[in-house]
Image 1 (cartoon, rainbow, N blue to C red):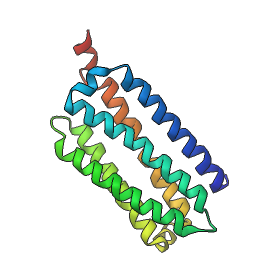
Image 2 (tube, helix red, strand yellow):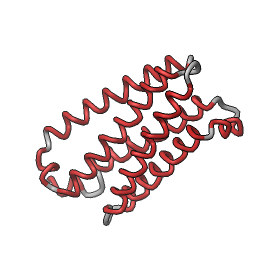
Image 3 (cartoon, rainbow, N blue to C red):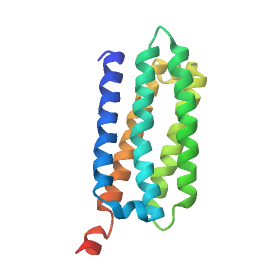
Image 4 (cartoon, one colour):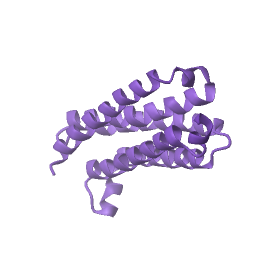
Length: 161
């Protein structure tokens, strides 16, 4: 698949996930009144929004203007890393969420590192924009895992029954 096509589909998919998440949160107003649940809901939101925006910058910059996507990936990854670290510091009692957030923090750091030092992608025989795509795919998988845990986590059915 052409990398430009990938990022177009990836970005559109992530923005769709953002919209779907808004609808889910809107139907659970109790989440917004509980600070811990609001933080996790915000974390899910960012786990789809930041990769979506990165995908847009990858389309704008592409191979012709790598400074555009590289700069955007660095800035957005730093924002994602900082926000995820803040969430991680407040995670209590759910080891899965803590591990997911730690993994997301690592992925954001790697995204920033590849953006700053694209030659590192040569070590895995990928172009830098391809290496970033693999990292973003992994980040979205973690976002889905966090969403699943939040929506149907351990004990959720027993609490609602």
